[in-house]
Image (cartoon, rainbow, N blue to C red):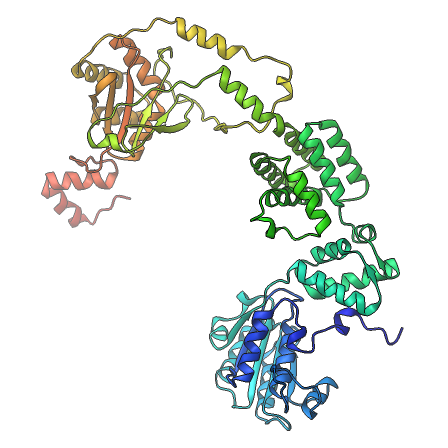
Length: 589
């Protein structure tokens, strides 16, 4: 018991070759040593457990080695290497900045810098968690870090580079350590297991690697924990039981029920998972990752993004063939939305169940959309093209406020399409804004199950039977009725001023265009088109009247809207007013 050493310490890298997953960085450091191109300060940054401090120790030992190998590694036989391995070297000093972060600690370090190394070429100071130093300590360290003695070399290590002062960063060579891939962690765990005489299934080691989240130290700690649990026989089932990891099997079963639209079975599976003690948010995040893995498994080019064992990989590829891209896109979106709303939800289980219900409805949503499209074809009118404006695209705004492209219109123009059967009403206050509906529904409402939607067909028959009036009219008639409507407006002053200042211009096919001066006028006219157009259609005896609102690029006349603009306009008309303004030092406030 006294001689037991945890794997994270026992198998800590001692050479550059034994560092896992950081080949590019170790190659750069070895080349710098061989070429004798050493900087005076290095900053190693990256996530926890990826080899920052280990590489710093290896680097410090190697540059002081008296007999380097041909590969640029330390010999581990000279006096300097033996002193380092026996932890009695006076050339290498480690400082934990988390507990030694004051100005006095930095001053003590600076005093040690003045003493040259007794053996070897360099005196190396490794400062771990350097971002924990106070601002005063950083400032006290700046001068020494910038111009140390020729025999001094600093290696700073941190997990949070953004907390290090820019003045420190500018004085260091920065090496960014990356997370270790799952394949590299599994390979190293297999090596450790062979050295320790432990039998381990590849799928079990893969789960440990995923749980470690790119950190080798975490992976080795979990490995030791599982070895103790299994007495040296690591199986997939033992790992998921010990680490409280949700089995792949549950996700495959949920996917089967979702694809078949079996809501009740999906809810029973969810209840089974919750009964085992798994957290709801872990369930939904795991399900989102499961759909993501299915998505990348659908194509050989994206299969490299999927890091699992061979047997599970084949199962994912088979399941992915049954899922369409559109289904997986929507499933990932629903799972991610549930994950975002989970913490704020007061009934978390109901949120999970509702998400599963919506997922089960996805398989039938596409067929329902196609059936609806066949029953209710969308009719669209073509907007007129006029001059250069006919070459760019415009937008069509329906009575509900949904916008869609219309050929033959100005890029800044907006068409208002109001049904010909819309009733004529007085200009009341604009209706309350309704939320925009997505192009495809999230699912089928339970109220609609088994109910055939006949109302749209009846509306179309009533609309087709309505009498259509198409009487010609002139631009003067249009402007007259336009002004008559503006005269009826009492409360909407901005709309009334916009209609008075912006007159309509008649185009082809009973379209007319209104050129406005700013987006505010455009929005006001578009929002009130549901009242303006029925009035004009009735007064002009023409049910095909449509309106187009366009913002002019250059205003021929400048209109004063704000108090400042009105004041400036009055000053231009009457210069005496400007003299009065300056004399009494007035303001618009």
